Amino acid sequence: MSGLLAAAMLVIVTQNQVPLRAAPREAAPQQALLSKGEVLELREERGDYLLVYDLKRERQGYLHASQVRMTALTPEEAPDLLAVTRFLRDTPGEEALGISYAAAYLKAVPSRSLTAEPFDAIGIMAERLAQRASTSQPKSVEARTSAQLQVVAELGITMKGIDQDSGIQICYDGEMFRQVLTMPSADPAQQARAALGLTRHECVDPALGPTSRYQFDLWRAEVLDHVATEGLNQVLRDRLLMRRAGVLSAIAFWQSRRSQNPQLAAARSIEDLAGVDKSRLDGDELSEYADAAVRVGASRLAAQTTPGYSGKLIIRTTAARPGETCVSLFDVKKPDGEPLVRRCTFATVWSVSASSNADGSALTLGVQPLATWRELWVFRRAAAGWSVSVLPPDTEGPGLGYIEAAGWEPNSKRMLVVRESRLNTHLHRRFEIVRLDTLSSVTQATSPELLSGFLRWQDPVWRSNTVALR
Image (tube, helix red, strand yellow):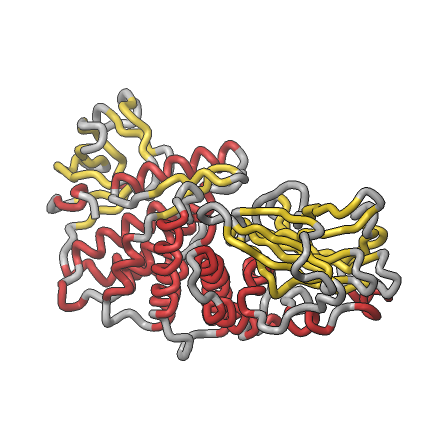
């Protein structure tokens, strides 16, 4: 932690907007306003005032003793510092003060008595502060949060800003969580919190290149695998499974891009998602579960071994330029003739998903350009010939989402489609019946039970593999 805590006697500011005065009296000129959690060196006591030195501002001044807590950082004070840390750890809005107490405890406690608890507490508070700093807040709250960020930065807590589509995401760099994972004294819950803190999806830099992102996702999976689910309470166990499912689904995509077998990673992601006890989730946990499900849904075709019904049409893929795949559509009766239509892409083509309608006038195919985004190619025959159209999960992407064909109506004029995507901060799932000629939705619902045609004509292969019916 910061060198601020190297002095023999310190004071921790325990209130907001505390004036640092030029003399030990209330009417003395104000030199600065201090924030809760700031740490200063104690020089001497003068009645109800303390003469302190502010290393950050490189000046000394006077504080009223009622507005601070003095500590000599001795082993005798360690239990009291830890008790306050425990209280503040679970008190939203008091992160800077809690981290200051935890840092003081780390200086006071004898090395033989040190456990993972203070590192866990600092990580929890730093992560909570980062999350609050990333959300929209009233101006007054925003100012207090900004002041807390400055305080913890002086204590050695590093935050970074990640430029996401939704805005700047503030993320804790996880130093204390890494420390927890190296300590034999860390219990399963502390290890789980550390692993979750180090693997947040929203804190992955979108500017990472494919190779760096793949290596980072492998590291995230290793961190999560390090934590055993046995001995965890249900909440932490479910959060761990959801996070790991999302990470493994990304790894499956990267492995497909590197011509590696992605089936194991994809199968594990589906298994982890299925292991979550959804009945016990509520609030933010349900949102996190839906997020994990969409991530798994985007890559779940990597685990599918049973192909869809190709009927009168087949596809063949060939390599073109490095990283590029070309898809050619053929009449099953003329597999060696000229392709009916051909289209190339740098995305991953999931040939196993190819599915044709009964009269051979259309075929759908799952194509995944990003780890968290899968589109649907629709090959169609019209009077002017064959064409290929792309249906995205939503019109706001690419982002987090997938779309997949779920079957065909017997007349071959309409198809069943399911989409899941995140729009702004909300996840949406809808089941649709889509006209083949216009690719417009005839009807849609949030549940297949609300669409009689969807229940009647859904593809059994799709039904047995999709995560949309979770």
